[in-house]
Length: 213
Image (cartoon, one colour):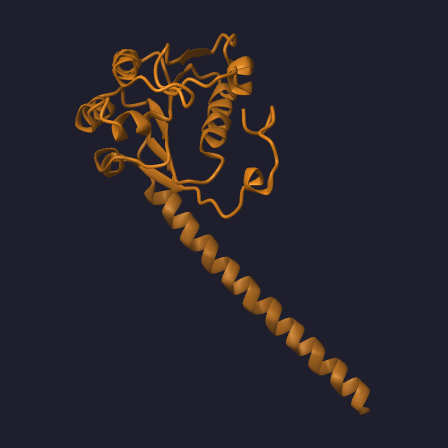
């Protein structure tokens, strides 16, 4: 047999072995996934925390809410920080019949700081949040930037945790913010951290509609 044919056969053998090893790895992964699916026998709402200094926490949360809406679920949003302009998510979701959208009144804003006014607005917003958490008609609640209200001492983390634990069993809740109180993290079902490796703003790109707001 020529050296050329020998090399071809050796290459074919290697390819067959690699294919066999790949199939074995995939079969092992499938078995593990199937076992996890079989063991996941709980049916209940979850508490999801999105934290970190990277961009995309609120965007991810609103994307999840859109998914819930696609299944016909009743949703509500409370944004705990009032921006200087109407956001795209507010303009899109505010008048949707499946969504109750609330922006914290004349409270915390990045532009003008008035601690006493902020505290009052935060407490009013949380009183609304407690009512939503006790209402079983809602399947999905989003508390956007809630963590800042705890960080600045306007709301009590233990009180929030108690209300979250007492909510209807089917209710899903997402909370966003750069940092998150330990009391909230301790009861969360899912915690995702979004890191900041690069941001267009630091490259001199202005904030733009449809991306930052």
